[in-house]
Length: 331
Image (cartoon, rainbow, N blue to C red):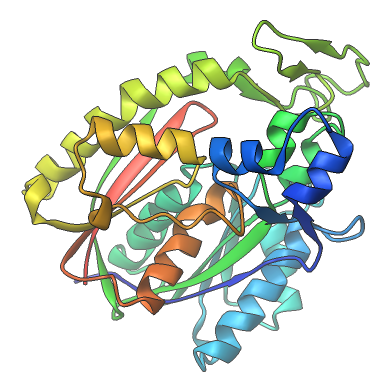
């Protein structure tokens, strides 16, 4: 039995943080420098009282309305987020009630970052293949802006907030192929928020600057850009090779590659490293930024609108964990 992506919608918060806004805060930078370095001109930021759960709710309602989906068919909810409203209960359980879904609906959260959409597709496919569910609502929702220190200009230029809603079913526009997944927890310290959960409950107030001039604090998001770059450069080529092998495809068989939209420099480097033609490498970053687990489904949705999804598609996510994953789609 085939498993498919049937529909995608996404939601962006109303508040917009432009490069012009950032230059007012960090005058040592210029609008052009930010755009040229990270490829982002503006990013959407959740309001102070707006959470990932709220964004996920808006995205799901938009999915139902845009694609005329009867919410009564949903029998499982998967929510990927690293910024949940509560330690407990599970945000997906709250979503079941908010969205008016049946009490026969299964629901769970899973905590992953930039590889989260790929893992979510694998979980949804497994549920449907095992006849546990027929129609899975896969949601990605992140508010990384709430993890970032106001003076952290590096991360503030990159990240935006967003949520996506996807209907995974036994029919649709893209059949989900075979997966390649991987993990290397040795890289955990290179992209981390240390404070706030049970390992470190108290504020550390230990702000410093690392050797690469990145703001470093246990109380906020820390990203060692150099180490993340090295991890990506080493892991993604092997990931793509394994995806192609598992799906019995060659690189020339692929009509479009949609990678996690990390930043302009990283994506250009990977495209050249893998010798992918520019017209087969999709980028949608400029007006949304790096939205973590939502980057791939947002890009996939936009590529579909532009009618660029034809034949075999490769999706690849990689980042915090370290965690990586890829899959092919057949359109």
